[in-house]
Amino acid sequence: MNRIIVYILLLLIFYYPVFGFDNDAVLSPDEQSLKEINEICARLDTDCSKKEKIQLLELLADKSITATQYHSALDAYSKLLDLKGNSKRKKFQYYVGLGNAYALKGDYILSIQNYRNAISLCRKNIDVKIKIGNIFLKSNLYELAEESFRDVLSINNNSDEAKKGLGDVFYELGVYIKAVDYYTKTDLSAYNKETVVKVVDCYRNLDRIDDAVNFLEMATVGNKDKELIFLLATFYVDKKEYVKAKKLLLRLIEEDAKNFKLYIYLGYLYELTGDFVHAKKILDMASSLNSSYATTDLLQARIAYKTGNLLESKKYARNAYSKATIFFVKNQAQKMLQFLDNK
Image (cartoon, rainbow, N blue to C red; front, side, top):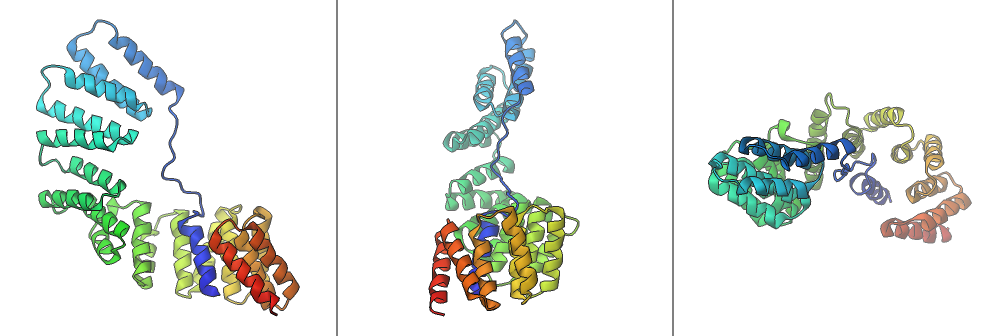
């Protein structure tokens, strides 16, 4: 049963983030940004020199991107490209700008088209090639993404972004041995939190727990990121280094006392080490913060059974079954009820 509980708890980490991390959050443009955009547009409607017009359109494009007004940015870059006498460097800049705006808008076909227009003006520019590779990666076109990143490495074999990109390609393909090889060839300065988690997940899938722990310990030195510290705690549990795991979890709870998922994992850890009194106390605290979570009741059912309270165990198992919204958790609650009914 322990493996089942571990699986359920891992769902908390990788599918239902413990700290509510959201990469896709988008901020609405504020009134000040919109006001500045309107002022620039008003100035463009007046008589102005070509030089001033270029400056205003470039400013408009920048402000529009910042304010997530992508249609306005596209219009500005298109007008800049229509102006006669643009240098090759300026055309390259505007095509890249169009590519960026289309990418942010989610129109990847037109984005790649404009990035390729830019590359036709500067064939050795690796930054744009990396942008194209990332779009292919985001679009699940892994062969094309790999081709783009390898093209970059043929120009500059020290490109950390290209190596990280190839790591991402093989990670998405589930070829973890190749993914971790490219990730570990990438300088740590190019890492973000998502990359750290992917490296660790590679090690987990390759059953290289020691490497995962060593990497996470290095990644969290001087880093107060709660998600990475929590992840390290889960690996300490995998290695049965329970004292280290408890220390990290208690530290996180001290910093984030209302995060009920931390209490659930700590409760599981106490139950795992046979400290049922503390386990129940911690899980009661988790329920007081959020009573709708089925995993808490599932753990409480296990503890009640192990301490000889069959009726209480059945009560918690029924609660878990009624609350569960994930099929796997509901199925495990049902199996526990069937097991308890035969006692």
